[in-house]
Length: 367
Image (cartoon, rainbow, N blue to C red; front, side, top):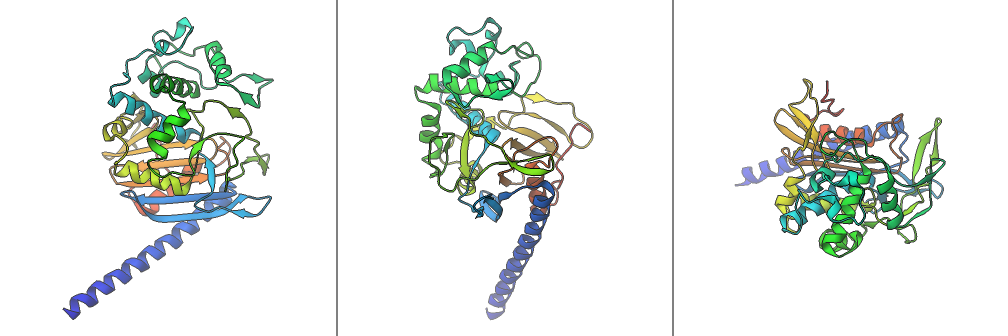
């Protein structure tokens, strides 16, 4: 009996030492990547089966006032919003309140004739033939304030880039229009529907839709790496409907979100799994079994294992290796640009450190 107790104690100590060593190694790796990628601040969580195995906060949420990042720092999720919007749509589908084959024009007054064959499912999977950006600008500069009608008017005037269902084009416009459909079906604002259906039941008390007039405790300031130095990125525009990019949240709340996705109690499981199903398969090289876009997620299948991922322009990344039961959430306050390190690079490094069979550099599935 004493020997068994002693062995159990030794095993516990070894696990704790191993975990401590892993945490130190991962922290060191993230700090190196932060410096290389010029990220002012990072909040990162690694979860197994919905339970955190590593939480790290690094750097500054607000450089001017020397405010460090914590797990309560609120970041703009940007396009990580899309997986939430897709889940909302699929929830309505599972409830029988909406059909994937429903036509966009059934929910939009005076819709352009070019939209007549666009379906809900095409919007979800970026196969509707819609352009990406659609908001009105002046000399290429966004306005400070957009009403929902302003946005819809601009969307109607934006030329199509392909016939519906014939090609794939990533489209903020499409996910904005999904927000219009959600509001038409539920008779609630998109913000109210998301709060009532997901955020409030999950106690995501720091999570809300973009509102530039709102006083937000612990709000991170945004930055960009331009011309060899950090600058304020001045993301101060107000949009009345932001189903394509507008969720604000903290690492603390996103941990709650991932815990629910890992073991749904509030969320409809069938709706969730429908968001993982690839709708547009891309050309695949030798490094992946297949890959493509699902509904709000990019999906890669490597050695039979599904890996969902998505990034957000404001500096966010999310990986869900669903068959490994592993997830990594990365929130940063340095926007993503083609000439700077992707926030997903930090997420892939953290995923690999925890699950070595996952590539630490992500997957170039087209090669």
